[in-house]
Length: 140
Image (cartoon, rainbow, N blue to C red; front, side):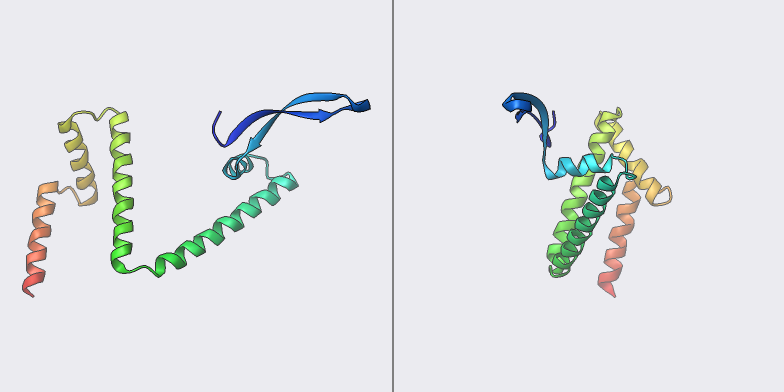
């Protein structure tokens, strides 16, 4: 089972002092979050838990935004580059899982992405245009 849901056996007291073993599950906070998200919101306890997690999520988003706003432009750029690198690796892995395996197939896959983003232009043309634009800006 996932690390967020741990099975264990618990001893409880039954009638007349007898003890009984019951199967139980220990949840991490994240496990609780997953469980609540997939539960029926019409039940008051579930509705309350969803509201709690929504508030906590929003609080963390605001704290993260404040922290990010205090970073220098170089630090922000580094974070963006790291995120982009991570997304690129995920995309490459997804493409590989879908059958894009060889170097040629991967290059064609990337080119298809560029063509989709840049109105049908191929990667080499986009880079050439970028270099020309940089030279033009430096000469201004």
